Amino acid sequence: MGKYQLKLPKMGESIAEATITKWLKDVGDNVEIDESLVEIATDKVDSDVPSEYKGKLIKKNFEVNDVVKVGEVIAEIETDMIDNDNTIIKSKEIKDEIMVEDAKDEIMVEDAKDEIMVEDVKDEISNEDVLQDIPSIELLDKDDKVDIQKTKSKSDKFYSPLVKNIAKKEKVSSHELDSIIGSGKDGRVTKQDILSYLKSRSNNLKDNIQVETSSSREDQVLELDRMGKIIFDHMSSSKKISAHVQSFVEVDVSNLWDWREKYKKSFFDNEGQRLTFTPLFIDAVVKSLKDYPILNSSVVDEKVIIKKSINIGMATAVENGNLIVPVIRNADHLNLKGLTLAVNDLSTRARSNSLKPDEITDGTYTVTNVGNFGSIMGTPIINQPQVGIIAIGVIRKLPSVIETDKGDFVGIRKKLILSHTYDHRIINGSVGGSFVKRVAEYLEGWDMNQTI
Image (tube, rainbow, N blue to C red; front, side, top):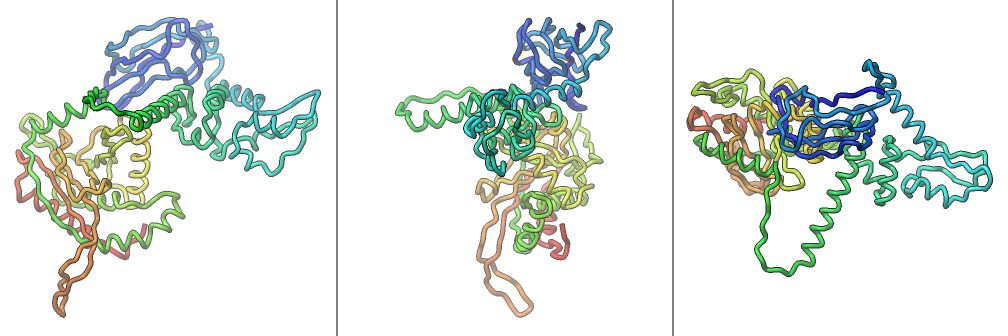
């Protein structure tokens, strides 16, 4: 029997400490592999810290609201997976194999005395969708077993017996279970993951009930959550720091629209992902930042630091109404396919609250697509310490005057409005306006012959 020291893990180059917000275990409680012990918060993101070993929590070194440095020991766990010399007796991988075997034993249906009816098998598997994957199920003799490969969910994910028992008790379908983003090893769903999902599902249900049954005319008082307070302070501070000014340009994106229509089906067939307009907009922004590098900078102590790397922040709205900005690092090194895959990956994980801390830091310029919400245009606030942010409005069909060699005529074109907010302390109107005009030129001059 040995002791495992649970340390605050590294969470990104710019994050050196975190605050303890909640203990999920008390001294004396048993701890499973990958089970979270404590919730933490940084100025970037909230997270939790899981245990790599099974055992018993015997000591807490910090209390709620204490600040912990990266690498400091948060707690100690007594475990039989480590001996007194801190030599690992059973590695985590070996323990995972043991859990898989346990899962097999749990799924296998065996009765030494009686035949098992189909209804019993259904109860054990507890999912109609899974039964559809089984070609045929007949009465089983005492020597028959249900193959574990036939009882996996459609996604082929592995779930521990604990998670499956919780799912069965709470009537979580396999479709719901597969949709949960796992925080364990190789993306495995942990106990905390499914409990968080159930809490979220319960809150959504309560909100719906309250909306339908509420007849009160009293004012509603809402407390900002931690993320809301961070956004509150960050946006207020930005308005105080930077001299905000905006420039607007109307863009004809008819060719861009037609190009996307041409390739979106083949891209989905090949990659299994949607081809949205966002990476196409980002591609034009990246090219324009190369032309106007002063927009890819920050101001520190009255000095302008032009960044070598182009790291594009992508403003993303999450389900609770808050905003998070995942960062596409070295976006200028990615082609259209790379940008599209990066956008889809980051936006999906942003909405499921599974971004890593270093994936929302070190952005050098931000793009926000307000057109996703039907907005014609917007006047976004600069994401400090950056000096510019561009908002992309909704694409609309508009009657337009089209100039040709044979004269002008009126036709229907697809257009949007770009809104560029920039820091007037160092970016004058000429540069700020020229930059957004250059973005428009790249979009209007889209190469119809390029592929993705």
